Image (cartoon, rainbow, N blue to C red; front, side):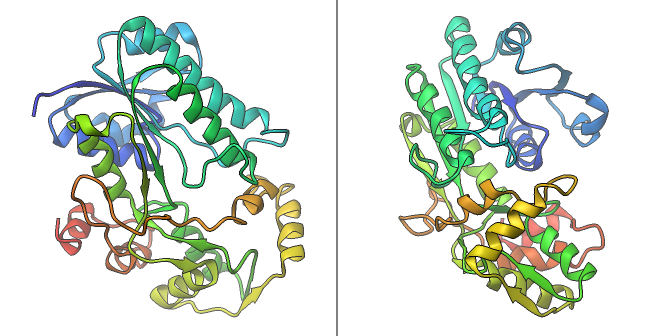
Length: 317
């Protein structure tokens, strides 16, 4: 494998950090922009990587970041981007305008290879601003004439996630759990499986022009997932399954809570089954890892984390 110079935009987050580890392990040289260097200390020790303080939304700074790179991985994503039609201003900035800027600077710098992380069920006519904005970002990059690969993962789990760990925290804190959209369907995928697919695409010319859905091997309702987490951590609680109307009202009320743990846009997203239409097959010969193999180790850790090497052994990697 020939080492490449790779710019990861959004590389300091949950998935981005795992991808950075995977790519440095593969011998690539990474450029990792961040707003505040002190907040990403976990990335500073990665070999063959450079953490740079920069504002990726500023075209001049973005142009400097792209210079000398062989590939760009675009993976910025937010779940709370305000309201509006077809999407709120926050979604427009992160999911549409930033990909447009990335496309422009990539074209100017002659960097043709771009990998973009979108979202499962992204579509122009999707029920939520989040999904509509993700589709708009895909379209911007597709129309730029780049060597583009798009990944659409389902909800991602793993040590430090904001998915199963959130349920664990709620179950520990509450005597019962009022659950919005209890029948919403998900097909969770392990963060390392997503990172490995993205990394593999760099050496797969056949992936250019392709869009890949990424899902785990099993489908669950939200109620099933919460019950599973409660069983694993030994904190089973009664679940109050909210009706559709009450689910909407809970989302509306949550928008006024600091940090907005849920929004009406999240509610709209959950009206679509977050599952892969083609089952659970992953590209490049990979097999998806069951949630039940990985989740217990980090859910029972007091910090919501676990040793990644131990998890890889469990997964047979």
